Image 1 (cartoon, rainbow over the protein chains, first blue to last red):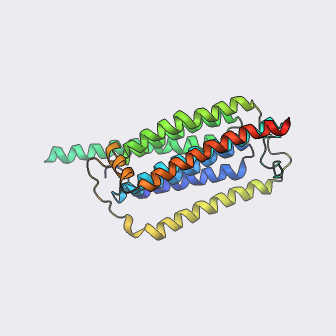
Image 2: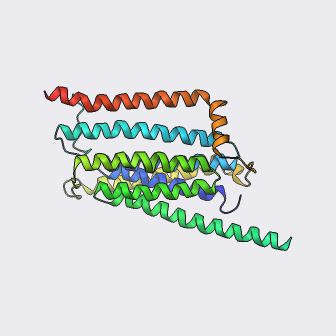
Image 3: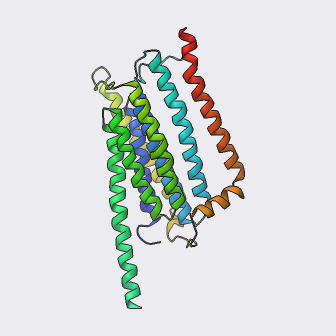
Length: 102
Length: 184
């Protein structure tokens, strides 16, 4: 394989996951928490595809595509929640949305 | 023979340069996503992150995944994000005022610990086998290759993915319509 070895890709994926985890933990706007979740999923995806190339086995890419589909489903439900929160005129702040009452 | 070696070295250098540019853009846009106070700019920064990741996928000879990344994420997911952000309206997050600062410190520590844990786990589990990579065939990662895998070895995953997407769509509709009934 030309260019950097698999280890470099894995290091980048780990940093991407870490930045995403930091965003999930620090930010309080649910929209940005969802965007940070996307970053974490993409970090995992990069590691999957790097390993897929490393072992010349396509199953990692299939797993990556499944992760993309799950991310799309998660965005669908998450944004539905944000719209429902907004309709009830609640604050868009995950620290203040601490009760699960219907 | 000499010119062949020279061409291979030049190709290697070009791949390194592309990797460094894409990796830097990836990390910089990831930091931008979590640091903008306006979610609109965060979603725009996520497009840059996804595009640079697509470049990295191309370097890893995953052409179909790179195309799907751009189509599904930058084309559909980010557009949906922007739509909802525009629907919700420009509500800025309040800066750190009420919450104690140990929360932010704890979050940074937890994220750092997670990063260290990932690096340790990967290097302990896979460190020995990462020395040399296997050679991939010419059609590795092409749409035909992925399609064949999806419809032979991973048919169950393919079908379950469609069910997951269907359930998510139904859930989105229920979440969107339930509140209206409750308010009436």
